[in-house]
Amino acid sequence: MVATLEGGRRGEVRRGRSVSAPTLSAAPERAVTGTARTSWWAAAGAATLAALVHLVLHVGPFVSQKGWNLSSFRSYYFYDQLSYLGIARNWSLGARGDFEPFTRTGSSPYPDLYYRAVGWLCEVTGLDPVAMWTILGALLQALLVVGVGLVTVAVTRRWWTALLAPLPFLVGTFAALTQGDWKTTLDSHAVLWGPFGVLFTANGESAALCLAGGALLLLVLVATGHPASRRGRYAVVLVAALLVGLTGQMQTYTFLCTVFVIAYAAATYGVVSSRRPAVWALVSAGGIGLVWVLGPALATVSPLATLVLGLAPTIPGLLLLARVLGWWRVILPWVVAVAAAAPQLLETVLGIASGDPFLVYREASSSNLGVPGFVGIRSGAAVVVVMALVVAVGVVRRSAVRVALPVGMLLAWGMGATNDRWGANQEPYRFWLDIMVLVCVALAPLVVESLIAVVGYARRPGRARDRVVAGGAALVAVAVLVASMADFALFRQDIAAREPLNFYDGRSAALAQVADASPGGIVLADPCVDPFTLKIVWGGPVAFYNLGLAWPEQEPQIREVLDERAQGRLDLEAAHAAGITGVVVDSSCSADWASELETHGAQEISGATTPDGEHSLALWQLPSTS
Image (tube, rainbow, N blue to C red; front, side):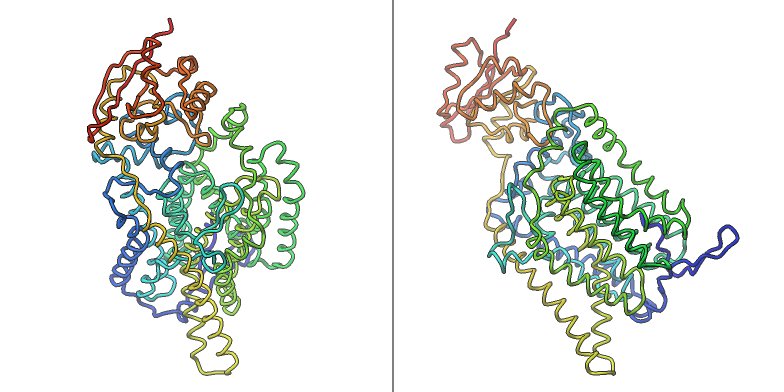
């Protein structure tokens, strides 16, 4: 954690000698970028308005879909999202355990804190999980936008800059200009898109990014000298550390990405502000080379351990910070973050060490998810351009913070997105996506400040060439950002043209009524009954699972049953072995399971007619094998 960027402090005395601490020159820079007093009431109003604009832009296309209601779900890469919703559904019913969410058997190492929170809030409020998913996701994003706005005001000292807070979430990857689409499709299921594409799901990753973004904004606030007291700044750093740690229990990749961003940014600051920056930069570069050399060998032992090795280049810079500013000031925030993430980290590490078959599968299932070099650079060009602008302004002002933060974040982005090349091979495209979101959020205040400074410089009397260069830099940065936002326009059109997923209709009510008669055990849906719908509207144990989320206790038997189901066949022997006790049958289904169940001695124990009056649903209880 960057507990060390304390604006305005010139130095400190330790062990009888004076050491020079980096200065952020906070007071002179404020004089350039804005007035000494800021109307915080106006800033709060502007930030609130910005949050409302964000929701209109991002949630508006969804809520305007034909047939939408508060209990509608996004028809947007929904397979995984509905699986996560199963966790929330269990918790809303009081079924609180670390098990595979569909069958409620086995164990789940998935970091599901957010989904547990959604389910708990459903139990408290009486809302269904789909409605709570929408409400809580929108609230977290609105709070993040407010945070961007208020930190931008603190940095620029201009209340109206809070109105610009929605802009970081509109940045795209130039897919609209290069491919006529709002996303870039890579190998396997990997894609590249802007922050809007990542956050729209409103899932645990989106929520974790909101917390991580808030943590980074707090650190930027501290880095630019806010609040005024050293104790206040350190308290803010500890709050940021706690938020970072909580993301570890919400989404593993978001936690790792946030750690990469903070570690590389802090280390770069330590190098840039040291007495011999060139020497320490070479030492750190050697660390990067070491990762690329040793990483592939370590990956044969543990890909996750290789990810930790990816932080090795930050060690020199972090040691420089600790030497100047005190070891405990640097170490304690990291301890807080690790402690907050510890339950999930320990469960994962111990599971891998014990050979848990699911975790072994997950660790080895990230092939063909890399980001081609040219595609990754082109897609992130808009962000890189504004990073360069912030660095240029930082160089002119001799501000270590404004040079180090963009450079460090760019290094973290590059290392995370290429982790398949240096051995870890843990979904590098997701590192690319998440770090882009974090960079857009964290650097937004500094980007606005830099644009104001450059425009102001272009308007001052002086050499015409300098004014032209400054004005040109501002125009290029704004033009590139606006051009990238064409992706978001296509994204809104795509979302608005879709239809929502509605689970709480008359057929679903009949399905829940039928399943409620289950005497216990796992219930299997026939090929015409959607297991997702059965799980969401009923909530009991359902014979289904997400291969990449968690495995049930009888995973081979469940898999055999589901494979047969996909072919329209019912494997009763495998069903018994998997602990399945009931089967829900739709009378309109071409796979006539009812006749087969009756032939094998199963009993129909409940039934209901669908609202159209033409079909019926029934629950059949399998005979005992004893």
